[in-house]
Length: 125
Image 1: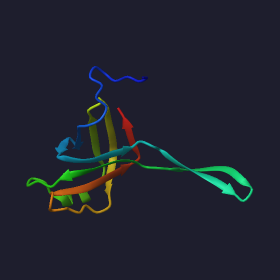
Image 2: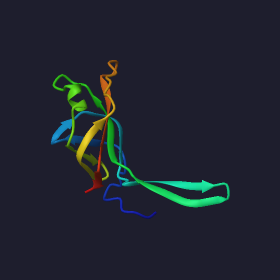
Image 3: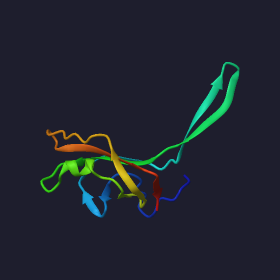
Image 4: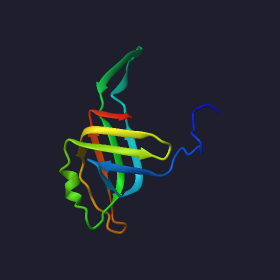
């Protein structure tokens, strides 16, 4: 097996999220993307011609818990925030100058809502 695992070989599981230094209760579905470009293959009737390349924002997204000291509408107003995720495997992913996209809708049965931040720069630090 190749790769570096650390001392206990934890690869996946728990994670935490902070926005401008404030920790939020993460339920799950945490995802992130560090890509800076999106490539699309260009084809014609005579074969593959090449590809196009367009800028692509980085993102951090997850499902969070709606608790008493939280205002969900504050997430919708987020612009130019720093989002940091810490993973059980030792990685830290950081996004700066981020904004939320989409509307946040609370599912009251579990008290959860999804958030997606996008920005120019998301990277492993």
